[in-house]
Image (cartoon, rainbow, N blue to C red; front, side, top):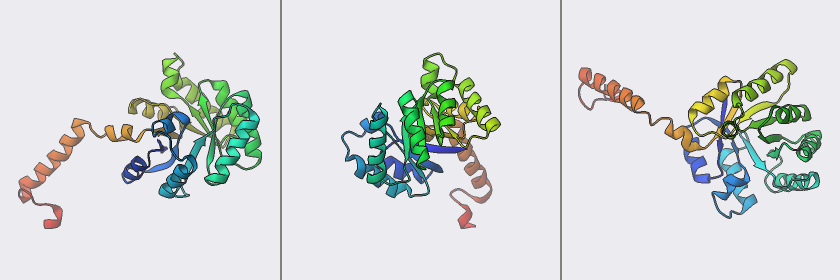
Length: 226
């Protein structure tokens, strides 16, 4: 089970990485839009500097045709680094590009997945990660639980090396469900994890522990004072 941050905000990545054990950073054009007009390659090189080479970095192409996808992938790999996972929406042209990039040993994340056939074909094409859109599927009356469960079953049965990188979440309940259905990885906004710890019961439990300790050892006394 792994968590990734779905953001390109460098300050958020720096801050929340101190607390949460993430394994990578994902991005797409809509997420980049939130940061305004950035110096594209410089910005992603800075993200790589922050997270290091031991964590994965996923950058999405814009092109819709095979030649364009390949050209953009080449530009990303040359101008950021050759360990970047190229995110490619699963279309016919996208599948062709996935196969071609994997033949070159390049990391690929198949994205914009709403259906079983998209994910299954991406696995067969050799994608390292497949990214089903949990909340978006729910909004379209597609059952993401069934889709993710099918992917997990096929990965296990046919021994695909592909990992399910579940995406598009509005709450932690959806994230937990994705893991329960077999997703190995989930990518989400850092704020979603942060907000999960705002539950009043958590704060009260911590306060109660402190009160009980002080009842025995004295108000304001901590373990280092003993």
